[in-house]
View: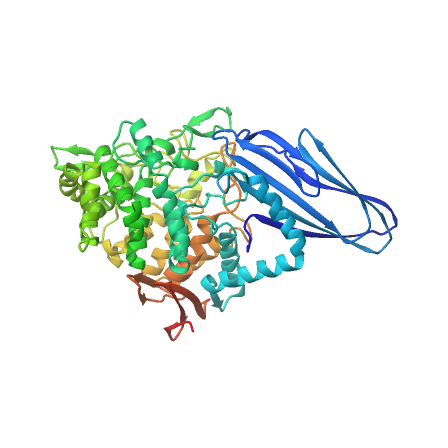
Amino acid sequence: MAQPHLLASRLTLAFKAGGEAELLTGISTDIWDINGPHLNDFSYKTGPVLMAEARTCEHGIPVAVAQSAHCDFACEESRETTDAGVYRRIRFSAKAGEPYTVTLFAAVYTGIDDPEPGKLASVLCEKALTDGFSYCLFAHKKAWDEIWKHSAVELTGCEEAAQALNASLYHLHSIAPRHARALSIPARGLSGQTYKGAVFWDSEIFLFPVFVHTEPDLAKALLRYRIETLPGALKKASEYGFRGAFYPWESQEGGTEGCSDYNVTDVFTHRPVRTYFRDKQIHISGDIAYALWRYYEITGDRSLLRDGGAEVIMQCARFYLSRAHRRVDRDKVELLDVVGPDEYHERVNNNAFTNQMAAHCMSLALKLAEVFEDDPGVIEELVKKLDYEEDLKLIKEIAPKLHPAITQGAVVEQFDGYFQLEDCTLDTVRSRVLDEREYWGTNNGVAAHTRIIKQADVIAMMALFPELFSDETVERNWRFYEPRTEHGSSLSACMYALTACRINRPDLAWEYFMRTASIDFAGGGKHWAGDIYIGGTHPAANGGAWMIAVLGFAGLSVKNGEISLNPRLPKQIKSLRFPVTLKGKRVTVTVTEDGWNVKPDS
């Protein structure tokens, strides 16, 4: 953790019987690519430091992996290359019962780090060999100690829950881009090739909240990634005939869209099935604008808005302005042919979550002038640069008409016509499944023409915009949608838990908390969508576990650096203790059955 480009490992061997032994180690490039080859132009070097270098297929970015080794015993070493790797062969005479320890160091760099990543990788391996394994381990532990100071949650009352929660945080911190100024986190972290290493809305809605409260600089890195990939979002919108910024559903380097039009396969015919995540899941742009604004609200720091964030919000609002339809017969504005968070129902009209995100994004474009009231030139120059005067006029008119129809105390219809779908139970839908890998969505899916949904949708809206809904409204919608939700996504349980806390039912939230916190600790989550493998770790659920514990059970809310708490502890938890970073200073929050307190760290 102290040096993110370095991997250190130590292997100790012992033999039941003596004899001649041989150990083969090195760098293999003979790997299976689930989505096709990522690298080409391989080359290898032998020497004290082994080296494998290649370039990415799409952009020609150089990648280098180096390895050094140390044996604490007498041995003979030879090095060799093949068409698929470079290796070190270690031969030695082994005695029965004697330990033989090999220390290996590997370094990884790319052309994003330096034009000549091979040199950096080689130097780092040599340095690690000189420093030694013990020093590297000491530095690694020291770095982890500092990370835990910022984020560890002490939960008493249930050891299993405490272990699962901090295991979730461990997974999240292991993949956090602390080494980068502008970088985000893939939906499956670094656990495999699922989703092609792409960045989803998970980053803004489920990962960002953890970091903005604990390590704001990391939160900025996630958002800077979106700011710097704005050109890709502008290009995507243009390709679909729209103005403004339509961010990729699966964002890859440079903000290019990695999502295909065929994301699942039919388990019976094995043919690709057309899905609409790439082109219809338009709430992604609003999700990003939402996080940019939350960063400002929580920290009071305008720097991200000044340094590109305001332009992102304005371009996202312009996209929704371009994408919306005006109904002159009803004086209504609509978003037609979309996919909300519930991906089992595709190409629907006026998904409540999507409409709310779009309307919110538009309202933020109008609020930017207030944020920079003392420095009006910031927004005035942007308006001029983007030729945005007419957009502002239209946004003022359209945004209020785009909000979903909300009657306090009533159930919000997830999308137009949802209430006309077959109302059946989850068990009924499950009984119609013929293959365990069968995808429930798409036009012919078993859930597509029913009210059974994949994940939190209306409930997610209520979790993210709590000020818009009364407790009665949240409770009524929770009780309506909860039995109709399959939780086929690891993103779902967090939202149901947060809203259960909102209606003072932490007992209902507890099950969802444990499901979320233990997903990569005890196992869980779907591994297949049709014939497509989607397994791996679940960073969004890892972030969701923290959100439930801190924002739900502890009831933490931070605005402009000011803390408020409204605890809702379940009976299983006796106390929660966690750090929060406010305007560069860390405080410790303690919540017990008897009350709470906030103390600044010395």
